[in-house]
Length: 91
Image: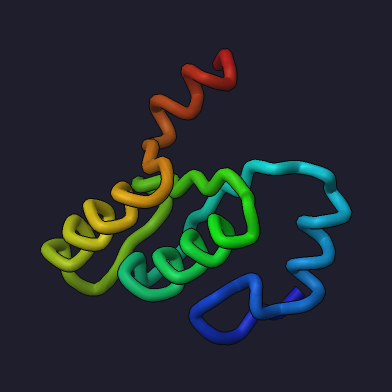
């Protein structure tokens, strides 16, 4: 499935697949934390999904921008790292 643009949910195929899954939680990862990850997390939230951004599975070109983006994202959705995610999943 190919997704183009800043919002992954702008792809009808992705939006339909997530809706069809019946799940209410969306884990988000990706590059350009301040653009694609941020916009998609807010878009998922606006669609009534519980958005979780996996911080160490995202990145961008600048370390400063990366941390600023995660701080901004954490004001709206859950931000967690894989170590804590593994604890939740019982690893």
